[in-house]
Length: 248
Length: 248
DNA sequence: CGAAATCTTGAACAGCCTCAACTTTCGTGG
DNA sequence: CCACGAAAGTTGAGGCTGTTCAAGATTTCG
Image (cartoon, rainbow over all chains, first blue to last red; front, side, top):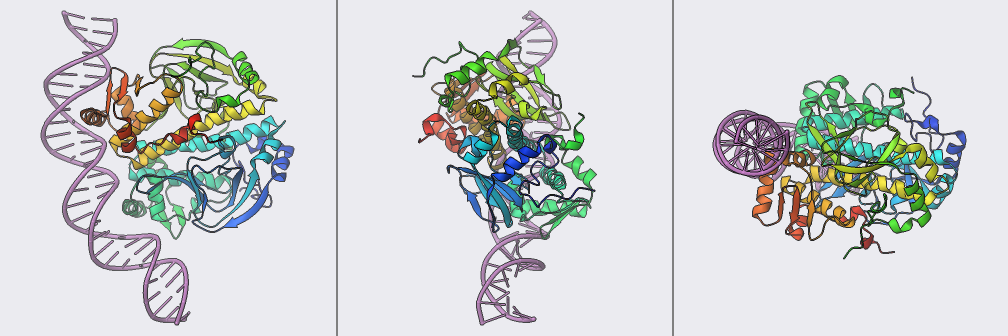
């Protein structure tokens, strides 16, 4: 059974399940102390536009956020889905501008850090710096897995793999259990994530449902046969660097 | 006409074309001074295996390196192609282990930095730290574009987009000009990059050749109509953060 | 020079898309 | 609370893109 999920603090879920233990109390306090502007946003809200200069970075406290790019015809390709505890656009700190859009999926609660404050917090805290860096690289690892999904899996495998990933990530922050978790996506959103059409995602979901593997309805995912889904999606959670995989 | 490409020094091509100017002479000297073990490797050499613990990071000085993941049947999905000046596995510094394999394409010359040395160099050099972080995030931006390629483009667009990217990146380090550059890939490798079969890549290349857009033969790429290729691949180099796009 | 790797081409097939219609759910105002 | 329109989900039929399998041509390299 998991610990209390620490939503009392802003950074309570940051890096949960991933080396969070390497952060000292001082690291956490310093980070926590420089947060500003905790606020709520409604569903389907554009937060950042590609090319825009960014001066703050945002952590997702509750809800879901996605990052995406538009093709010529305005069709979106999702490149990331964020869950509570994710530092959504920390890469904006070294990058200074983003190459993609950021928007909420469902309603969210977020906190932000001015980049100047981040720089100050990191000064003389190489370990915290490295953990923040690490968290942006976790996103990169998820990007790579996303590439794998699109490049090497068929439609069913893509959906299965994505659902397996979200399940593990949400479990880490105490928001999924027994393969059940909320996911405020439309079938069309899932299609934009998986490089498919909404119509085909519908067929894939039906197939997975009829085979007793997964049900996705009303924004709730239920993984009924995680073993089969992991196999279908060739899913191995190692890239999420879960603590329970570490040998040291 | 570009400057001399600075191959006299190990880090000569690092971040060339991308904010390198933000590094002070001291930053560069410190980084340069802690490099070790410049060496050559033959083509098609496995450098790092997924899951392996890494304690050094490697910069590519000459040649090409790729990163990839294997699917169940052993088919590869490339997730990155590196060109000279790239810090190939700097993400191994905060990550401590990689989630994918790294291998040479053609023969290469590389230099490495023990992670301990990197940590020391970064101490008290927040600007250098941020630039190193930035360079790992450039890879992440390229990952995102890779996702876009696979998710939203057809076969011809994927090849066109990848070739456009490589052209820009190689131009930045003085290794491409007039749309002409070396690329030691087989058609099968290109297929593994683009999520296609070797057979289909062959047909795509023929089509692009017949339409006067691109010739790829004997490890040499010639972009004959960069405008058409950029359009076909919906390519916009902004995500590579080229200096000549900055407005400040 | 010969063997192996790579490239090339054809033909048939499969997976996913497109288009279109219909059903269900959701959201809002009366 | 119901009625209504809009949004989301569902299903079918047909078509296109890329795959698979197979054979032959060319290049590379020992």
